[in-house]
Length: 287
Image (tube, rainbow, N blue to C red; front, side, top):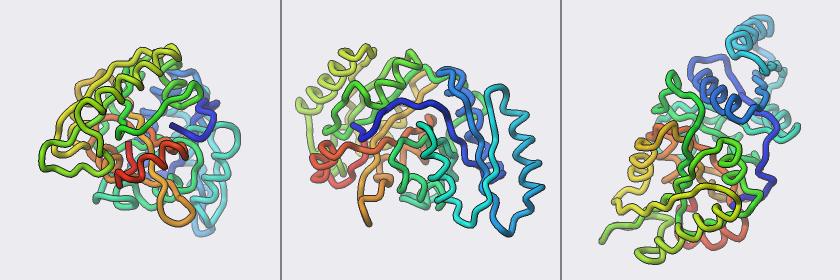
């Protein structure tokens, strides 16, 4: 599924010191506690910012965030580059909140989160506006969305997460209903059943409890959101799509809608070259 070692050694939380950005903190706390990872808060202070005020605001969040949390203030006029440079230190899992407006790309995640997603070679957690961050604790189940073409290896993010969280993975795909065109899902019927069964079998080989689900739905994102809403303390994992200049990573229409409308935080994982080549005929490229 992914092009990198799927393990992480800390969580990195970029904050612009707004209430929207702060929504990522409870989710990060739940994941960090469950996996026992340290957390680093990051604020990029522009040349026009009041550095002392930014430092005070960041320190306030540091106190509220609890143990094993550090904070860093980086002066830079290029927020995305600064986040990317810090993210390359170690094996960081970046976690950011989204504002959830619009349908695609920047309109879903915000310009900074969109550009970080586009440039990062590693997975990113996106916390959408429908996630109940006030009641979010340890993730206890994982929704693994697939478009019918993903594969799973022993070093993939989904395997590492499931083991660390001791969570059941629900492998979910959507079969288009008659007369409805679902981008990125050109397989139907028995082929989809065999696909999710195969993914579950692969995950079982790697010591992961996995359960298959194939649903029929006019709108695949709605179906995935409905499944997530029925799961206990869900975390969603979906593949990003490569498109545009230099193969930048972005959100497909399905992934973007799940981030915007779903109750689960979504980890967007870069799709492997082999899987991505197979899925290009489907158009959307999202899981």
